[in-house]
Length: 455
Ligand SMILES: Cc1cc2nc3c(=O)[nH]c(=O)nc-3n(C[C@H](O)[C@H](O)[C@H](O)COP(=O)(O)OP(=O)(O)OC[C@H]3O[C@@H](n4cnc5c(N)ncnc54)[C@H](O)[C@@H]3O)c2cc1C
Image (cartoon, rainbow, N blue to C red; front, side, top):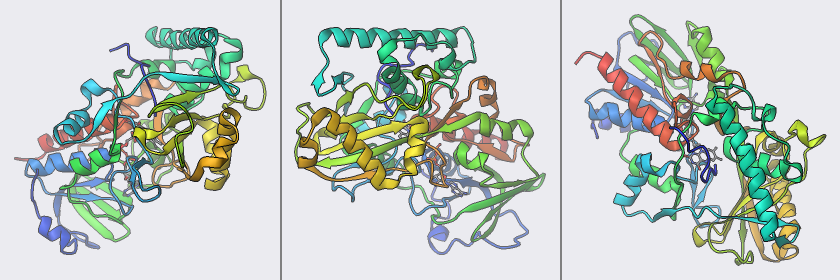
């Protein structure tokens, strides 16, 4: 997601049994009776990978299970589709000064650089005039301030209930602060939650964000294609049920998305406390997708990583009802390549998934034609669209509090009976919705588990 300068007010490697892992995964047993490992970690996204690495480094026995055939989760570098790096998930390294992956990238030869913060505003087929830029910036700032003021005052209300009417800029400002940043429309998130997040500089990586994560976690052992279906837990430990059999452990760390947890993708027996179950719904998943378009040449006339915005078409109904804007925001010529990302968010992005990949590409091309005319078709090679909401392993892009539900966030990261531990982006207090947030929650949960186990 793009955040530019928003929300910036507030504040190994254990080699344990690697051989056994690669030689057929002997701990998975049906009806096993004894505790086989210290910890089972569920999900090999950023949080699960770091949790596993941390525990192995402390000498614990760990199995990391991943349902899909790859690591990284919502960090997913695709080098095949376009023959240039295409981050299907996270692309921006947020909160640069506190992001452990940025330091790692710098020290390991990755080409990272600060994201240019300038947005290029188009009105019809031309760039905005100085006056139009001024008007838009004023509208943006007043909406941003109203959302921030409500949050600062502890108001757990939606932006829809506090933002001013900024006339013809309503839709664009909504698109930029809501769908683009929060993956939600103005009526679906809390000003207080929005306020309680770290700000900071955004960075890019020429090799793709996913390349950093792949490199950083290359030595973490993981069992792919193993879906966790249930977790039985009690005083004596946990039994993690998978499609390949059961695994017994002393403890488990669950790192799957709130989308998966809210839909009972994993059956807990006995059930989780009500407050925790409610929190999975209250800190709900927003939708944010990339429509990636490849062009023969840079006809945009904008340098690399130019960020193009324009007033989108209103959704159905009155603008002030905050109907999800039907528009894209475009990051063009990513790191100087011939790939551009047209991003969509909020309910509109969810609806667009129903149109399929081809429908999404058509939509984005149509939006680009409004600005760049026939040059779009002349230079277009091919496209793709991500579908994070329809993917059963995610069921959305990242999570934030529904209006009035900010207090529920604290239930996400708490352990249950010192048997079940939870990590992942949504468990982060101030870096939620980010890869760095997921990273730190994985580390934190691992340390908690380590301390709770006998030495
Ligand atoms: C389109 C998009 C753009 C984004 N942009 C940015 C950005 O620019 N910068 C940024 O910092 N963040 C961004 N994010 C958010 C960021 O990607 C996530 O916050 C972060 O990657 C989440 O990591 P995680 O470990 O918490 O969860 P996940 O990455 O979701 O990892 C959980 C893992 O669990 C697996 N799993 C699910 N169910 C099961 C099961 N039953 N059994 C076993 N395994 C299972 C999943 O396959 C997955 O691999 C973006 C996300 C999306 C979707």
